[in-house]
Image (cartoon, rainbow, N blue to C red):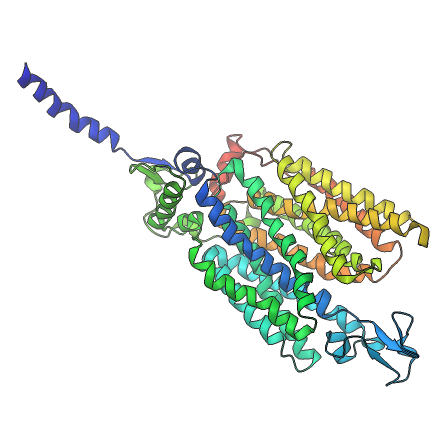
Length: 516
């Protein structure tokens, strides 16, 4: 009897071992949900480290508010303020409060007939952001990867930011702002995708929306930096140093996206990251589990770099499914940006303290992020996009009807605050919505196009604001309402798979996994 039991053990044990060792293919979302954890300690640490880059983008973008502001002047019998019209005064009969180095306007005399140059530099910066979003959107999808692209843009931003502080004249200053814009256009783009791609599908929406707290916190910190460094040259140096710190203290501890590794055919490296996620979350990843692309057959398992690795915006346009989504995402992003940046610039015209205005502008966005982050996982991405766009649009339209008299100034200001409250929620929701509308192989390229469109809106926003009166509010209201109508035609992505390939998304559509 003992011998037979031993023989049975020898016969059955190898069979059980073979069965246990049978490989199981999973895509990244399945592996996160089943084995690694959707948002545990590893993702939290990675998220915090990566999203700090958003504060850097806020510094490089909003520093112009302080660096290019028009300071008060003293004239006549020591009077100070806007009552002194420098364009009608003789040279030498007035002087800038704080000295000629307090801003670029004071140092280079960008007033009267030269005042247009301030707006020109602002538009040049956003044009650089447009260029950079396209360039780094492609590079982060191709050979540089998400982490590599984020590293490059942070290096570029710190270098050009520091060089800006030593500008000998206006034209060199404009050139440096353009190149800073090119790099800045890629910071948020790369950081957002890198932070959200390792997060599971049920947590991705909240995580994606939470990235923008870092941008608003960066804006809120900027007035403090500007107060401590009151001259524009010192301010550019001070606002560039955090980028250098980020490169040294944060980048080495950030991991490349496992999704990028997978679509580039680097399965072993992708699995290495997934094992780190599982270990960091106190979970166990079985040895027989293997990553695979969406709807990948046994005969098409990745052997190296093949098939899905090479994706571009042309692939998005060729597919009817993604082409329609891209057009809508681009138009809505364009309209949203006009309102968001337009209302942000309009806040500085409230006539109160500049430092306080910028801080209040940032604080007003924080509750919008929180509410939207909670609600998108309850009502979905599509309904929230429509509601926030229309919410902002309605208050802007009301603001356009307010008479421009002193008694109604507060009412118009409140309309502007509610307008930016709604549009801040939309502006940030569009990021998470856009990455879910497109597969991994073309996600950054598509997001780059939408980001470029938003920068086009940012370029036009100052031209709308300069018109004054109720016209800007009317334009902002129109953009919000039209954007909400267009959002009706986008599919819902709540709790849908985050596809890796165009084929996977198209197959998912056929099987009814994606709402049309």
